[in-house]
Image (cartoon, rainbow, N blue to C red; front, side, top):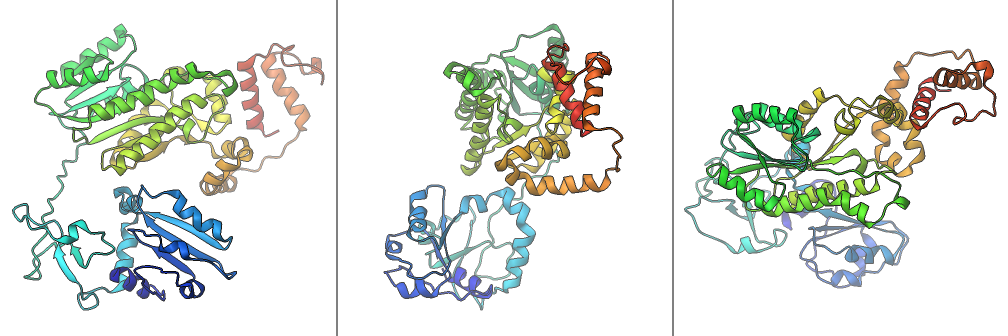
Length: 488
């Protein structure tokens, strides 16, 4: 409490510290903000706002704090703004790495030293041979009377050095003597992942897949098996884990890559429970089975392949978006438990169902999502694994089309992506050459329809229907894309 109060005072606040509120309305009337630290009691319930001044209430909490606690304040007055600060999110490794320079500069600016902090101190993380434990280990760090500090060198005789081992930096993502599991590893993105692990020194790779083993895939696997020890396992996860441990008895499981997926696209009114289960089961049940089967393994990677559909949305893929949304949340859940977990929201790739489908690829591009070639997949995957963030999006955007055809119709997405899209779209407008349109939009559309339908422009009239001109759904997507590019 003293450290926080001193930090706040040095940052320009006028701070008063109270162990309990005790209904002291005087403090409420004079204060612009209140910060509540755990453990919480019920003293705050006596606070009542009698004025019209805007006030901010901040709860420093963990994942288990009930939203009801914060909502009670908001209901008392329209001038009260309630905020929750989740310590687990603030102290996540990825967040600290991103903000380390700002945090360091802020701490240095406070000018803390032993004279300004006359507190009892102990070394954090003593040697394993020192079994001494203090009462501070069982207290909240907001109420403890002893400050535990990390000691990196022996500058003071009464402060032993913290026992913090250096992390090994091998420079390699994978190890020869470890096992890496890939679900859906016989096709599409899963197969590319198998190749990626093999090419980056992964010694033992186990693939779990429902796909039939074609002669072409069998040949590729035989080549990889001779070089890297790849093995094909049954899709039953719990059985597969025991088989992997039996086959590689001296090699620990160090990574899981979950790329299994099933698609059944339809608008939500055309979906029933069975079609939701069909799409949800491989991703949701697969992730949970892998989680429980490897819970006692110290994994370097637990990577779930999600989709851009759960990030941006897709009206015809709500079941698939729901399945991937679970993977996104589940990886955050694992990270909050201190376990490995990464969700990668892949955009459209020139693999599987999209492989060389030019018309459908043009349709996606018209919506702002360009199809990535396979050659970019492995480099993007490597970047994600090195950055090691709980959730990352890999997508090649056409920001102009995204702005015109998606964000203009979706207020929620527009708010989420506005800063990124506006920056990219502004650069695009500055670099785009000015084109003078010599024909009217009406004539431009007639000319495009004529090119697609092989019907003379003179034979087209305003009452002509697309069906009557022989334009099916695939040609209609091509028509939409051409009109979008012409900006008519």
